[in-house]
Length: 294
Image (tube, rainbow, N blue to C red; front, side, top):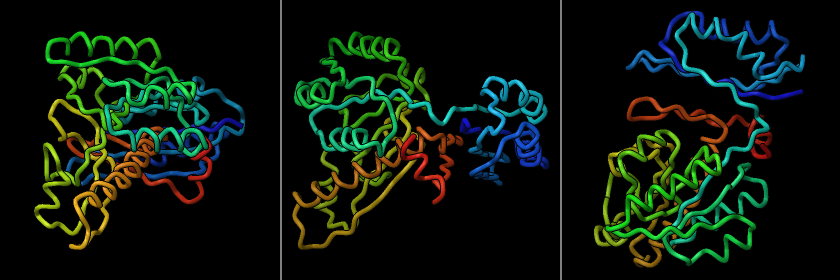
């Protein structure tokens, strides 16, 4: 039996859930997980349904039958085969903690993705990447060659069929045109609990201010630097006895975990961009194991 995920967003109105569940039941599908949210401020409705086709119908056939319902409610919708592993391109500069964490999670099956390559503007992690049998692309970036470098990045994206770009501490600002072209398909990890301590050396700023919580933020990339819709955040409590170096070490652990959770939510189609915010449906206890293994 094939498992699918249906995602839907539209204007909130009566009868949407009944129409979707009724259609799936009529087509011999069994719903195994369902989440929904009505945004009372915007009047938008969001829904994610995971189901099994007990009659063995193909995704194309199910989409064809669903089209009249989608048209009736003016839905934006997608249907995904749960067995599909999203093609992900990682980008990194000189801090490798997030990259190494993602490679490990991918290797043990905790992050069911297909890593199609790693791009870096330095050679620091070339050996690590190549030892995982993953293509490594060195694309240096300077003020003079930035347009050409970004064009090369987009060539890699197109050649590999990349569905998601992950900036795993890639310390270069992407152009507005690239952000727009890949809208909703680039995730960044920011080494701060946004919005706070922006710019260089956020941990130094936090240390100097004597904060008691440090954190990290994973968000979708937009043309507005570090202002994209937030997917995941977390914090760690610290004390006056810890040094600036401790802040960095603790912060890197938080960054790695937050980025991995954001990617996990995205690849399982649990995230919806809702203006400047996101709707993120949590993995239910019964569905997490199946999601974990793809």
